[in-house]
Image (cartoon, rainbow, N blue to C red; front, side, top):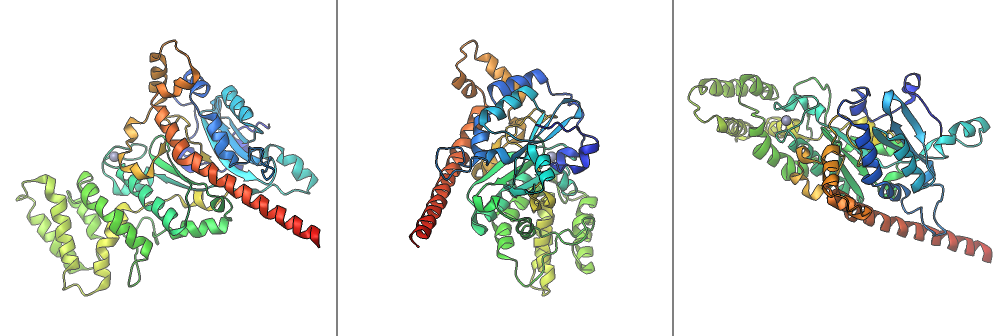
Length: 454
Ligand SMILES: [Zn+2]
């Protein structure tokens, strides 16, 4: 394995951007001894190896034995050191290296054409090109991209008032990936602080070219024009695209009206409602609404309802029979989209060689574990109660001296997350991988039989 220090080598790296912006100084809250215990007793090394092998770890003659060894792992260590292009030939090599190096962060990269740790040797001989050949289709959604539509927190903070923005993103993207693209093996993971990651692991997703990935990312991209303009969403055409129409009626409208409107107090101050009025391209309408809202400043007794009342007034005015212009009626939808529609880090999804933090890592700043999120129960997910490194070790200690290894996980609140990972994601995934390996092996066998009879 090659060691590569951060610094000069940095420009060749492509790292999950959200974490990267903050630099990688030694995190204050992270206790290295705790981390050692976590990797020693709780981190699911074997499950990660099984996942990353995609069925290529068995005795089946159709297995690609080099598959796992061509996967890039990257470790972020103490003292700002990055180890990129790590590769391992077995579950135990992976596990031993993680336990020995005790990385603050583990990132997962693509599967390359050749073993990434030997890439220089191949480059010299020139007969084998070092290039990514497979990679999960990934999505990275970060709350900091929503700072202009949330008033409860900013930057790195999240709370239960703004977290529904992530719930919306999971619901909208997960449904489209399954229903519109036909993907089945999708893993959602809490990033440990203020966002979520999505891994689409179906064979046909892993083999997408960069161009195909860009096309899928564009499918989700309804933002047009300048990010700084008030009107962030432009919905054109006589009818909404079926995907957008479904997202609107099934998710966005409901979350906007029942949660965000009041939790974010979207209309409660002049500054806030002016931001919304700016999205309506009709002076007479906006001045009428403005007049109402300025006048009833004193008469409104219940501050709680003010957001709903003003939203209803705005809707009534824009959607009334008088408004013949399609664009004005569409404005209601545009406002809802602006405040709710998922904001993706497009570059992460478009390129195979982007690294993404591995599930079950410990977030260096919060100490929270990057646990999977069940998309069917994502409304129940609460980022403020996700287990932290410290609470897990406390739970371990409470178990006393009965040190039966298999029990250790179950004694902690991480057990549930790992059981979910296995039963809902890993087992169905491996079953379909094995079927795929079997059927492509049989096809090959049949072909070679046919060629023999010629
Ligand atoms: Zn918040």
